[in-house]
Image 1 (cartoon, rainbow, N blue to C red):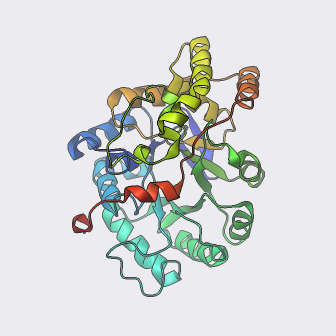
Image 2: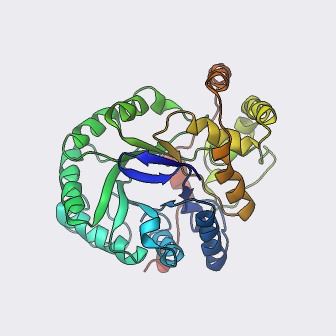
Length: 333
């Protein structure tokens, strides 16, 4: 497995997004099987595992804690995210983004993850006007050894600048794929300029770029693809030219469409690390194998030229995802 640097954090060039093991993509594998799959990814060289307290309201952190407990702690990089407002059964009267609130939140995550520090601690959703105060607290937590680095998720350029001036940001985590390229205009260039890493979630458009889905497919009610417009029948049909383009390049490179999707993200810069979800052993082998698929400068430019002529239909909008709801309150510990 090749490696990349998110500022000072050395991680596998492709990480594992762990959300799908408990949340968002329909019924997942059993806990035992999920742990086996995490270990399989580690055996193949993946050392970067991403979770968040919001996923299944703490259940995903608990799963990741169990899965990584049997692995050498100094060999894995845990990426966790904290939600800026109270989640169910969180009693934080001081406010989540106050120093007391962040510390209380962090202690809960450390307990669920069964560790005494988090490698990359990210503000999951940006709260305008609080960048400096959060950055100050992150600096204290880094000095105390409770976290090694911190990041922001889906921030705007000015939010990055204000926070980074207080405590250097290690990574920005945002959606990035051939289907979502808005960050190329300013955020990704800023990350390159400031030495900040960029972690790309949904690097295959929630699986669309794998070419494994058709407009005739239906999704479970607890699968976010049942509510995001990217997977409506009309939009899937309208985006067929994108799949055809990806398949064309996959044939040229003798690989799978999914690997082209990941190779394209990787070609955007050596500070960019995709974190696809993968819940089957064959998907883990396929996705991690994408590090061996290198697009030449000419191939990358040609692919981008053709992408620029396509119109992408549908999005992955948080307002749509909210329609799905989440786990029942009774399951929250």
